[in-house]
Amino acid sequence: MRAAIDPLDRRIVGLAVPALGALVVEPLYNLTDTAIVGHLGRISLGGLALATAVLNVAVYAFGFLAMATTPRVSFLRGRGDDEGAAGAAVTAYWLAAALGVVLAAVVVGAARPLAELAGGHGAELSRAVTYLRVASIGMPFVLVMLAGNGHLRGLADTRTPFRITVASNVLNVAVEVGLVYGLGWGVAGSALGTVLAQAFAAGLFLRAGYVHSPRPVRWRPDPAEARRLVRNGSVLVVRTVALLLALDGSTVVAARLGVVRLGGHQIALQVWFLVALSLDALAVPAQILIGEAFGASDPDAAARIARRVLLVGVVVAGGLGLLTVALAPVLPALFTADPAIRHQALIGIAFAGVTLPLAAAAFELDGILIGAGDFAYLRFAMITALAGFAPLAALTWVDHGLGLPGVWGAMGCWLATRAAVLARRWRSDRWRSGPVLPAGRVP
Image 1 (spheres, one colour):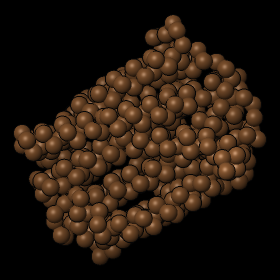
Image 2 (image 1 turned 90 degrees about the horizontal axis):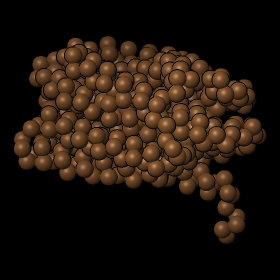
Image 3 (image 1 turned 120 degrees about the vertical axis):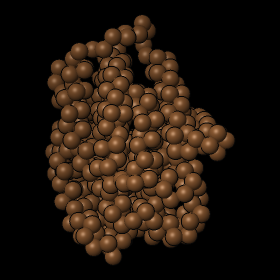
């Protein structure tokens, strides 16, 4: 029986299962915040929703620190250049820390206008500003965590990020409950608890990176690697901003529908993040294994890995989608006692479950092209996908009667467009040229 299992399937599963913990780190932090703050009332939950929308843009715009580091490290490993892989990782850590300090200063200074831009007003705005200013302290830690995820994934180590994620989230829950309910610090306590957990996780990632590095460790950043990371990052930032325009655009539209629908959407969106990014765990093996295959100059192996990951992802998504829809009547009670918000959350979660197969196709194709270093096309695909989101989102903005079905219908159109554009690239086989092989070129 064991011999009948494809070795590739075993390796994909072996990388994907622990990768799940690392990938859902931010959604788990946000889900914890939502569950704890949700019991403080509508105003606090609405403020958290607005702050989360801003932080998603602020943090995920720098997702390239993981996204570009993983294939670079795996590519260099595939070529047998362990020292070069370590140098790329050290450079990513330095850049993450520097960008995190700058980002923290920006969020602190612009917290109020950013929350207003997200649709905040009145008491909700005040709660959002408070959360943002406290949460900004954690920005350097979050970006170091992203670089650490990229480094360890590139080394085909997805178990260590999983263990770090579990430990930091346990700490997050314990500290937040004490600060919010024990000391009565409200949304500020929720944000501070998350910051402390992020600092703890960042320290563990740095320690793990040191353990994995060849001796002696070179602590200075490599200028060539820094230029490469910045060039790839400049492409991926545009891609990520386009992604977040859709995700946070849904929150902005929901905010126009009133505090009850906004609260319901916040709960549904955090559930969707957790489940949908669970599917993205299957894209991590694609990034690692395809990067290794191109480093070893084996595009046929890369194509075989891509086909398998895509098939498994869509099948798993079908099962998770059915489970999410079935649990939609139950899940809202975990986050709020307000019956009106529960009803709206039920609607959102049911729609979220229906979109999961589309999300799987988009996520797995993303992972394939990330492993191939096809960053420019990823940017094009994400910008194009906004054309799928905008029409129904705009109509819901004008016609509030469409409610959350309008918001989540726009999300479904966005995912369908994104998956279709990425599938076109995959079927063309142009991605199979892979990263450019000479070391001085951008992969």
